[in-house]
Amino acid sequence: MFPDSILNEINLNFGKSNPAFQKFRPIKALSGGCINDCYELGNAHKHIFVKFNSAGKYPGMFDAEKKGLELLKTAKCISVPEVLMCTNAGEYSFLALEFISPGNSSTDFWGDFGRKLALLHKNHADTFGLNHNNYIGSLAQNNNQCNSWTDFYVTQRLEPLVKQAYEKGLLSNSNTADFNRLFSILDDLIPGEPASLLHGDLWNGNFLIDKNGTACLIDPAVYYGHREMDIAMTKLFGGFSPRFYDSYNQEYPLENDWKERVKLNQLYPLLVHLLLFGSSYGLQIRSILNDFV
Image 1 (cartoon, rainbow, N blue to C red):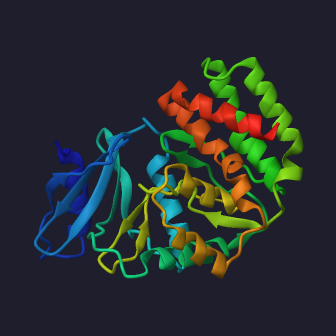
Image 2 (cartoon, rainbow, N blue to C red):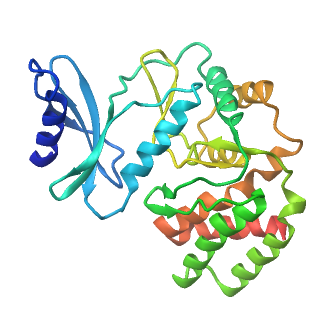
């Protein structure tokens, strides 16, 4: 059931400057809402996408998503939904976005997608991180800025989740010792690069094919980081064509041996999944550690 408080807030907002405005009504619940409830709303002229949750359940989540989408949009190289509203209504918080009408992939969908991601990654910053924290899935994601990627990867990504996983009994003393050994050699394993603007959670469920047949990014976990993190995430659950990587490398070539570092860069999302979904991801994490330490 779509909450009346949210519907009233949306209709009030859209109707303020338009006396002829036709009120939105819920069209249908949408899949993919494992964290938040998601709905399509519409009237005779326009459809919008709304996600909502109990206010305070994930403090600042929707505001962080709003900022992330707006930051990606400023890069002017890859499509994202327009942010329409982000506020509270009664006991709920919600985010209203442009509804992306689905389309069929263009002839060179994957080549276009790879090139546009490379263009996104050409947006650089002086430091690694972001000026605010956000979420990856339902986990809080710290983005305290660091001058080097390896410092950021250790202190803001791996260490906090290793600690949480250990405290929950999902990692052993031996596992944490292996992580500490890995931390000490990361500078030798990862080539230095400028901080790139990342989507941050780029698996095959976090883009849509729009009516123009091109990729539209959704559900970002943005920060400025090493661009191989986005690349590694695309390979974690598959679904990306080889053409995607070829096109990316034509536009912004990755450093030598990038494929050998994919698993290393997957440790962070695997730790996220370990904490969210349980011990089945522990074996994969331990296998990667054994490859590097």
